[in-house]
Amino acid sequence: MQRRAQDAQFELAKEELKLQGRGQLYGFLIALASVVGGFALATYGGQPAYGVILSGGSLAAVVAVFVTGRFTGRRE
Image (tube, rainbow, N blue to C red; front, side, top):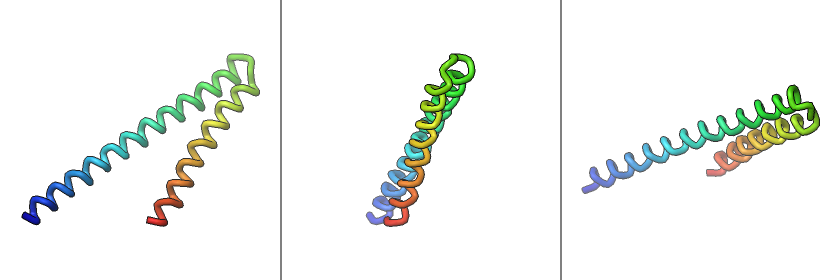
């Protein structure tokens, strides 16, 4: 009985790790698209201020997520 409960808990933990990895991949792709879009806007769009705002805001958001995640991970 305990063996089945442990196996079920292990499978749940494995699925959770898979979902977290997928979320990190999607977050990276979104941040990358925002930075590249900001660079393209600044370089080719003739709007350097908007490009800097888009790229800088995207990078600041990604850094904030990782920093807050690191601090909350230490508490647990």
